[in-house]
Length: 149
Image (cartoon, rainbow, N blue to C red; front, side):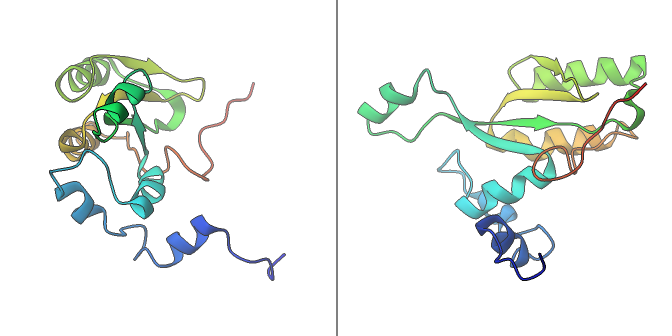
């Protein structure tokens, strides 16, 4: 098993400077709503996926525009406990930085959708201020919350 070749994602992780990659540069690249290709893989370990609006995909392609990119951010919530103050703050964060929706997952987490690139960093920052809640390890090939009786 130790002799198996690395997958493309494992190569990206190996040269990523501890999962930093070029995320800072990608986030600062204002003319595009997207991240650099390798950074989209690394972003998963920071709890986010880059997405595009498939309902607008063909229309934007015909107009020779890039896809309408946005991001989904998933929290990790140890023990699945969310206090009322945290819930209200999460709702506010969803309205300020995302499309106003806050989704609950079957793995005791929350998801924010419709977050544009310029709002990604402030959303994660505000989430980290809530305490005992993070986005690290919320996506990607990581172990997330599991449930048992």
